[in-house]
Each structure stands twice: as C-alpha cells, then as structure tokens.
Length: 392
Image (cartoon, rainbow, N blue to C red):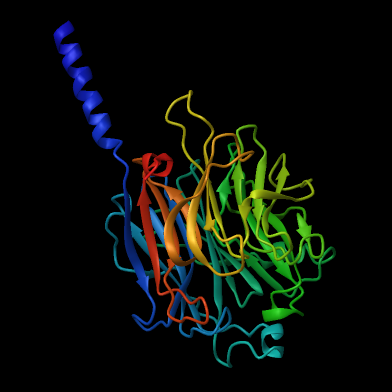
C-alpha cells in the first residue's frame, strides 16, 4: 500500500508539473471589415455557472465613432475558450428608436441609424442565469436574460425608469452601462457600474458622472444606487469596473480624464451607497481607456486574495498600446509589475476565468489606421497564473 501511495503521489506531482507549465495563447474572434461590419469594439466576457464562455461586443457598420448603426454580437465556447461557435446577434429589436437628440445636435451618426451600445453581462451563480443589460442610443436601457448559457435570450424589458431616478441629482441626456461585465456579490446582489452625461461636451459623452444600479431579486427589478463621483471632482469619469474584496466591500476602478493619469478608486460597504471619495492609484496608469478587473478564484484556503487588473500600460500619453496585466495579492493595495499581453496597438479589455482555471482576456488588438485607434481584431488571450507570475 505504501508503494502504491508513493507511486500515485509521484504521478500526481508529475501531472501537476505538466499542468502548471506557463502558457499564453491567442485566438481572434472578430476581424474588422469582415461579415458586413467595419469595426468590432467594446469587448465583454463572462463564464457561466456551467462553464460556457460568452464573448460579446459591438459590431459597427461604420468606423467613425461611437454613434451610428451598431449591432451587438455574441460567440460561445464550451471548451474554456479554445474553440468558438459561430457568432449570433445578442439582441434584435422589433421596434424603431428615435435618435438621441444630443447626437443629432452634434451631427453624430446619420438618419435611419440605430446605436446599440455597452452590453454588460452578469453571471448569477445563485440561479445559473446570465443577465444582460444593453443600451439603445445612449438614451434607453433594456434587460434580458438567458437560462440556457447564451443559446437564447428573453424578450428585452426596458429599465430606463431606473436611470430616470438619477435625474433629480444629475440631469443626464446620455446613459451607458459598464461596459464589460457586472458582478454578483456574495449576498446575491447584482452590481452594474454606469456612467451618465449631460451630453453637452465632446462626442456628447462629456461632462459625466459615475454611478451604480443594482438588483436584489435576480434581475426582476433594478434600483439606482448613489452617484460615486462627477466632473469636476474627477475630470469626466466614465467607464468603471467593479470587484468585491475579501472583507465584503466593493471596489470601483474608474476611468477619468484628469491629471495625474492614474486610475481612480472608490469603495462601498454594500456596492451601492456611501462611496468613498475617489483616490488615484499610482500603481495603475490611466491612458484614458477602459480597463478590466476580476477576482481570481481561490484554489485553497491558504491562497492569497488575488485580483487581476488589465489595461493599456502607457503612463506617458493617450496612445492605446501594450495591454498588460497586473496582479494584486492584498485586495488591490499593491500590484506586481506589469506582464505584457499585447505589446502593440491594443485597447479595451475584459476578463473572466474558465472553470479549469484558465484566465481569459478579451481585448482590442491591432489597428486599421495609423492616425487613430480603430482595432483590427477582437482577440481572446488565454493564459494561466504561472505565465502571469513567471519571469518570461
């Protein structure tokens, strides 16, 4: 029996060494100027309770900007992101929508075009459902859900009335969820960071504020939380990512346009109210771009509370390049040196973790033009913790 046990132990140790070999793999999911779309942008990714990977994005008919004819696309993987099913529309509306007046005033988009924007998914580990929020014309928000791992979706239900409750405090004309993914807290609450704008400034997205909406009944109803920060407290705060810390607090990591160029960080005990005054994290550069953040699952009670952060690692300017990962093992107090995922042109990203422990980063890669960041691909990077923490 002792010999068998030693042999079995040696085998398991050898198997662990094989499994633990560092790796980084990449696969392109969407390519610009293919399948009828000039550009694919704004990636989001989640892994369902059953282990299906859902990757979603905006599919833009024109490459000019955030306003125009935009559809929302989704792809599924059932093998931890190694292979992918054909794309499908995330949602298709039967009704026609009026264009956002602020876009019309600034001559953004064209008559007859409809902008679908900022898809956000939240995995509900309590029920197994995947909740989605999608926006239309940066003016209305709809909720839909899937109970079959993204094969089909419920009919969209409008929840813009939740955003209207912000108007006494902030008279918004533009709304946006996320983008990326929302989170579910340990107590079951669903959290989605949002940003709002009066639409009077540049691209009708400025000035702006960051806030939060949440659901305590698995997506049946949605409530407004507190406004976290508004311009000019931070210059034009917008796209925000969330993570729950080991002590139960929620940390918001905030994009903004202020100086110095470091990410803003705010905390709330319940993920909805009484947010702390944002502070700048000098370990996290801010090239004014969406970032992503996620808690890595603990394999044992002895594991450190690891949080992974990804964004373009460029502290010298606004050029979107060098998408890199940083790891924290103390709930975001400190961060390891950056590990480069994509050294060239690269921008928005979102993170998830497959059930086999593989980390998935869905991000914008390459550029179709030298003078502007218009990504050539939306790409999945698959890597493990050993690659992230190794020297090579």
